[in-house]
Image 1 (cartoon, rainbow, N blue to C red):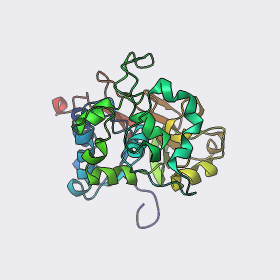
Image 2 (cartoon, rainbow, N blue to C red; image 1 turned 180 degrees about the vertical axis):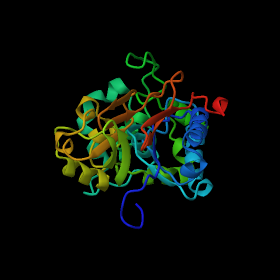
Image 3 (cartoon, helix red, strand yellow; image 1 turned 90 degrees about the horizontal axis):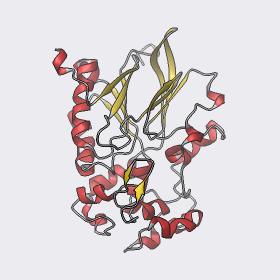
Length: 315
């Protein structure tokens, strides 16, 4: 906002799921600067929508890159949302905040108990004190076929094998806890579950309007009250076996009805689709697949930028 309290035309960039594809991230970052211009880019608010790890080969490099941004771009603001994959990665390496109610992480297992054998949960060193999503993430399904992705699982049902390998250890190895640097663990521990930003401008068919932006990895559950969800997300309640707003599908696709009357935009990744409808923005064109692009959206313009765009050729 400007000194008068009025919204400014500040650039806001929301970056979709990266999933360990460092080369794509580098190209996208360069394209974003070309798309908005150096001055606006250097002062932009950049919100990363989560899922930095798994599927792609370079999780270690991706997190190094993200950690470097505040010193390389000191005038930018950076927000790093937690995705369901990042939550599970953090759970495996002991970087999740403890449950606020003091319960042990093993209390999260029961809800998924019938899946333990079929999903090949992690049973190695440290599993006794691990959140259920960490055990699922570090397990192995023996190369079983994933019909949703049209390929074999890479290690676990989270496709975490490439993340282990990017830190120099085999899939499912408890040695990952030692191999992940402390600054990466801190990055995972500090990820926010929701970001709320007031006075974001957006260009619409009716002209430019001022909105509240809510960014959350999967979306807001339309069957629950928004205030209740935001309170839970702000608190990062890790006693929950599953956080719907980070990992849900159909139930978080639409904007909850109670927000439809207010100038609010909801921005997410997670769904393996690029979907823009009204004030609902889902920015995950890649879905962790090698042959699809990483995408980002720029506000106010609502321009979509991909790593595959050829801005340099247009100069």
